Length: 280
Length: 271
Image (tube, rainbow over all chains, first blue to last red; front, top):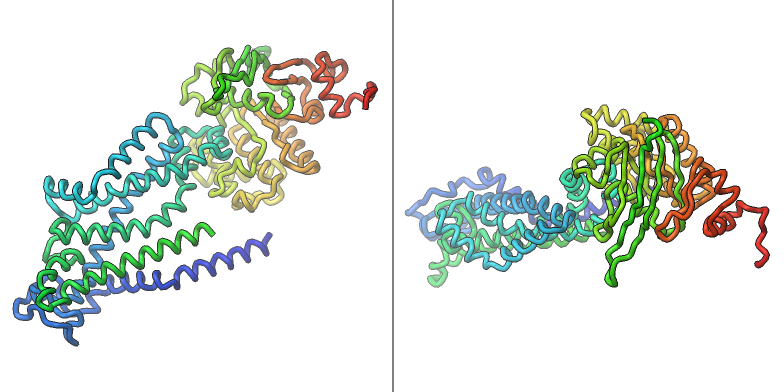
C-alpha cells in the first residue's frame, strides 16, 4: 500500500514537473512575470504621451520603438499584458461561476430546467458575439467592467454545457444515490457531490477560454470598443499603430500583435497539455 | 404503539415504463416490519427487491412509478410525504446500505469527510466534532485504525473497509430502520461473514429494525427471524423463518432452498 502510493506520488510529481517546464508554461510565466515587474523593467510611463518622440524606430533606449503619441511601445506591451490577462481571467472565472453550477443543476435534475437552460445557451451561442458586444457597448458604453461582463456572458454557455455533460453520467452513479439516501437535498447534492466531480474538464478548458478571451478583448479594442486609448491594451495599440504601417513604421502595431499572438498560442498549448495531464 | 409496524408496505405495485408499454416490476407487494424486528426479503436478481427498497425511499429511477399501494413509515404515508420531509428522513431515522460500497462512495472525499457529512446533514455540529463521531463509529465497526481510515479516499479502501464505511454512513445518525440491500454480496466469503457479523451486532445493540434484502436465502434465514420470498415482483410467501425452512408452501421457495442445499431430507430423484 505504502509502496504503491509513494510511487504514485513520485509519478505524479514527474508529470507536474513536465507540465511546468513545458515551453508554453515557460512562455506564460515570462509573460506574467514581466507584466508584474513592468515598473522595474522599464523607466517609461505607459500612458503619458511625449509628442517630441513620436514614431521612433526600435533602439537601445526604446526596444520596441515609440508609437504615434511618443509612448514607449515596449513599456505599453508589458502594461497591456496586465489588462489583457486580468480581464480575460476575470471574464472566464465569471463564466465558470455562473455556468458550472447551473450546468450541474441542469444535468442532475434534467426536466424543465434543463430544457430551458439548453435552449437559452443555444440562443446565446448562435448569436454573433462581436455584434452582441457592439450592441451592448453602444447601449451602456464601453468600459473594462462592461468588457468583463460581456465576455463572461459569452463564457457561461460554454461551461454550462460542459459541466452538464459531465453531470449526466454522474446522475446515474451509485454514490449520488447513496448521498441522496443520506439526506442530501437536490441543491446540496449538486454542490457537494456533482459539481466537484466535474472540475477536471473545467480546468482544461480554462486555459483555452482565456486565450479566446484575449483575442476577443484585443479584437473589440481594435475596433474601438472595450479598452480605450491611452490605456495600454494590445488591440487598441494595434489600432493606434495600424495606420502607420504603410509608411514603413511597422513597430507600433507589430509588437502588441506579436504579444497577443504569443500569449494565445502559449495558452492554447498549455490548455492542450493540461487536458493530457488530467486524462492520462 | 409497539404492535404497530415501523414499516408497512401495503399492496404496492410499481411499474416500469418501457418502449413496448408498461411492465409491472413489483406486484401487489405487502410486507411489514415491527419495531426492533428484522425481516429478510429474498429473491433472485431482477425480481424487484431493490425497486421495492427504492420505492420505500422514494428514490425510484425516472422510468419507474408507483401505480398503487401505500407505504407507511412510523405511521406516516411516505408516498404522500413532501420532498423536504423525505430529505430529513433519509439518512436520519431511515437509512440504507447498498451492495457495492466502493462505487457508493464519492471518489473525491475521504471516508471521514463523507461519514461526518451525513451527520452534519442532520445535526448542527462543527466539522471537527462530526469527524470525531465518524471515527468513533469506525472504531465500533471494527476498523482497526479508525483515524487512518478517516483520512483515506475510497480508492485506498479495501472492499470490506468500504462496506464498513458505508455502514458507518448509515448508522451515524442512529436510524430506527435500516434497509440493507444485499450489503455483502460483492465481498468474498470470509469478509462477507465479518461484515455481516458487524452489521448484525450493531443493529442489535441499537435495537433497530431492519429490512435485509438478499439473493442468498441461507444468509437471510441465518439472520432474520422472519422472511418474505419474492419472485417476479410478487411476494409469494412470507412468515417465520423456522416455518418456511421447515415446510415451504410455495414451489419457488422449495426450489430456492434446494439450490441452497438446506433441505437435505428430500434428495431430488432426477439428477
